Length: 327
Image (tube, rainbow, N blue to C red; front, side):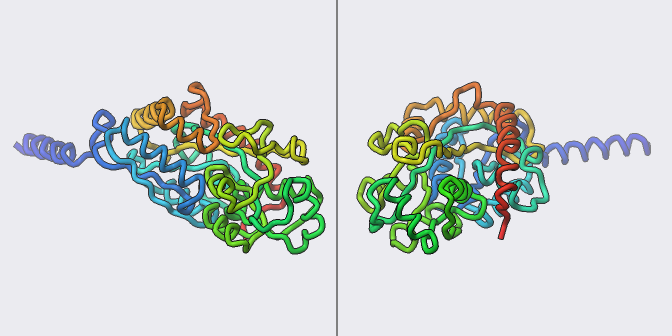
């Protein structure tokens, strides 16, 4: 009788636990998914994340809701994602700085490569070399001359210490043999507000953020930091053409989940990204923002892991040699 009672109790407990258990990967997702964007509203990371969230929602059949969790050049948001439940209902949109360079700049208590589940590599983009509209220089050679004459008082806005705009700015200083003041903001959008107001002098900014202001005359631009001109603004010369040959800088965006997220759920999230990037309207929106979409074979979790690992091997020595550390 005692044995039968134990068996019956165990069976009852099993039914209760089964009823309380979360839905499996077959049912996923059954509720909205939160996409953490670790930078403030208005920058290209935010803009691109919202495009991808909207497109992924269609494939997943549930809303993908963006939550901006900014601070410390993305460390605050990435940390929150790393500590989230690995159930597929929290994912993290990030990029070159937040999920690669920050590992060389901040003392993180987790590993950016191995403490996340890669979902998909999405797109890459160059910078524009922008300036306030009152900048007297009318081309890149004139801007370089102005910087040489005014480096001691020139200011460049960045998205934060160790952000792509900051590190690209340091590389630009090194190429020109100059040093100017870097002003750190919480996002490119916030930095751009001061550039538009004329508070800062120049900024390395993405077409996604600055091109409308360039086209309206609210900002000046001098070159794109790539080997080829961008399709959405073919009149903007490359750095090779404009007078700073060899100065190239592009940075990528991708998607991750907390470590331990089940592989079938990762597969569903990856399929949603792949479907979004195959959608003509989504592709057009990304291309209009000067994004270069990675080919299908590079959109797998395995490809993102290998790519991120190679970027760490390439950039961490450069960042550390430049002495870039969190302030």
